[in-house]
Image 1: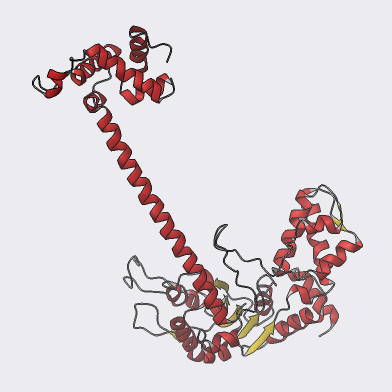
Image 2: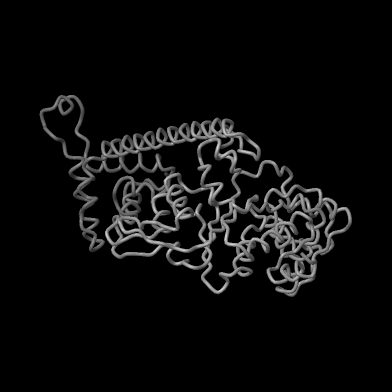
Length: 422
């Protein structure tokens, strides 16, 4: 393929870079567009795999037909079959109408299945049948339908490992990968990293009318040496963030270091707290190690849930005990709490009744009545207010709330019983 033709494709689709691996991927995409074979695009997240299906569709014989894209990893397992193959009315709860799926809607055109490695095994069987015969059955139907769709799939999964571990069907893999295209990670694209950074920085400058950021030679080398686990997407985020938040326009290594992680091998979220650290699942970890790490994470989560449940039960118990203590401290004031508050006079009257009921002896023949002098209502009332003020550190409002009377009444009683020093 001539360099002029390749450059025209890059300009049309906004592809930036000149590394051999990228050029090779674009060349294969343009060649395979002329034939009606399934294509599987493989590469890490953020490398720009979604550009190639567009190139294949618009450079092929189906360019005037529909182009539909579906992210298989973003759809719940229970509804993926319905999304792909459609369903009839009443096929499941909530299906009030029939609905055509992507295979029907894209008939004659191209269907891009992104994250195809995330498809459940049952759906993989149905997809295999469509690729082999062009036939499918909507969910809940017995009618066989036909479709003429070109499939372009993409995945960031190591498909050979997924096949060995039983997570992906080998026969479906070979059907999808009639033509395989590998998109290179950013760390393998050499000086393309610098070109892409300058492109993103210039775009931010033009869009928001600000001076573009520029890397000095040391920062440029640091940019090229960084492994970029998030690939082009991460590089774009760094360039945009730096353009907006950095006060300096000439970027040094010290400034650049503030925008890229110091440890690029551990960018996964870690589940745990200050006392429970769970290791992240890093790239290159085998399935057995991933399983062990996930088991550790589940154990930590279970421990945290049990601890949280215990804390909640203790809080409930403390609350119940506090309620019982408050009720026992002033049982006769409970009727007042449900009294009418339509006027200040009624409130004061209700409080007077409450104090009188609380201070009235239950019986006149109890042993205490014969051994100790009977305390008057004023004595009991004064002692109750004094204890409340001492317990609340002299805070009038809190003491009134604890006793169950209005703040206004409390101030009157304090003055009446000469308790103003408390």
